[in-house]
Amino acid sequence: MNRDDEARDEARRIINRVDLESEPTMLGRARHHMAGDDADQSDWAELWGTRIGRWAGVILLIYLIWWLIDFAIYAG
Image (cartoon, rainbow, N blue to C red; front, side):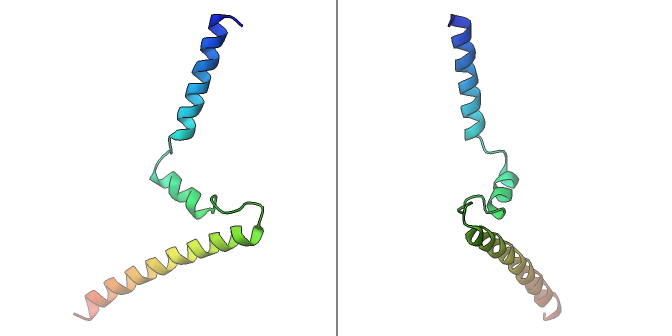
């Protein structure tokens, strides 16, 4: 291996490491969270239970926000 090959390999390792360490955006992290990527992928029940539970939580949060706004507007 000559110096150019070593430098090229080192540059590729650095670029790959930066790519792995940099999370795209908050939206990307939320997408991975809602998809249940942190759950055990080999256990279908845990994976789908995580996904369903997280989406149910989001739906409940949206409903509670809507209810609070509706209550504040029409009960005042």
